[in-house]
Length: 282
Image 1 (cartoon, helix red, strand yellow):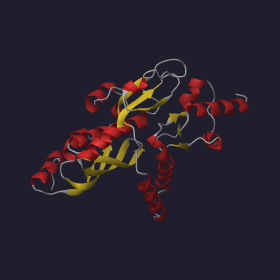
Image 2 (image 1 turned 180 degrees about the vertical axis):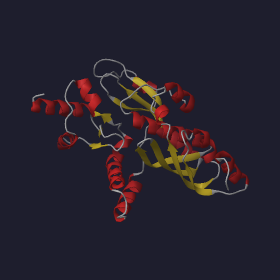
Image 3 (image 1 turned 45 degrees about the vertical axis):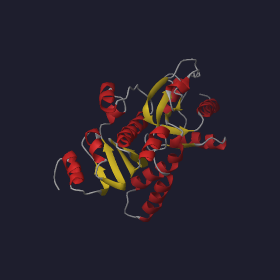
Image 4 (image 1 turned 60 degrees about the horizontal axis):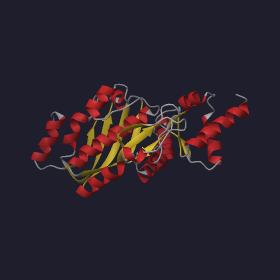
C-alpha cells in the first residue's frame, strides 16, 4: 500500500483489514489524520502519534490553538506540558466519538516534537470513562504561578490565588497521568540491557520514569519564572530537590524542560526557595 494516509486508513477498513499498530508521524499537526486513524484498529491496538506543531499546541499562536485544537489558551510557564496534555486530549476526545478508549503509555517531549504512545481499545464504556475521568480543566495564577486540575470550571467557585487575584481556567485538557508507570519501568529495564543505546536516551527514560507518578496530580513549574515572581535568585535544582524531599515533599525533575520541577506542594516549594535564598544571604 502506498497512498495518502487518510485514503489508506479508510481503504484498510473497506478491505476488512484491521491492524494492531499505527504510527502517525506527519510534518506539522496530526489532526488531519486523527479521525481516520481509529477506524482500522482491532479490538485492541497501539498507536504512536507525533506532533511537530508545538507552537500552536503551546499557545504561541492562540488563534491556531483555537481553530486546530478547539482550545482557548493563555501563556503559561509549563508550555511544553500544556502542549502534550492538549494533544492527548484532542486524540482522546476524537477517539471517544468513535467508541475507542485511549490510554497514554508514554509521553515524550524532545527538541521540536511531541510523541505519545497509546493503547487503544474498542469499548464504548471505556471511551466514556476516559473522557469522564481524564478530560477537565487547568486553573492557573499568572502572578504567583499556582496551578492545579479541576473537572469543571464550577469547581473553582471561591478559589483565589495567594495574592488575592482570580485564576484563569484553561481547557479542555487531559488531566490524568501522562503514561503508564509499569510500561515505562519495563522500558527502562530493557533499555539498560541495550549497550548500544545513546546515553541521552537512557537519561530521558530515567527522567520520565522519575516524574511519571507525579504527572497525574502535578504540572511542572519553571524555576526561573517562579524565582522571578518571588524576586529571588534561582537555587541549585539538585539542592532544592534534596531539601524538598527531606521535608517529605514529593518532587522530581522533568524531561520536558531543564528549568522545570514537579512538586506536590506549591507552598512548600516557595518556602524552601526562600529559605535557601536566606541561607545564601540573597
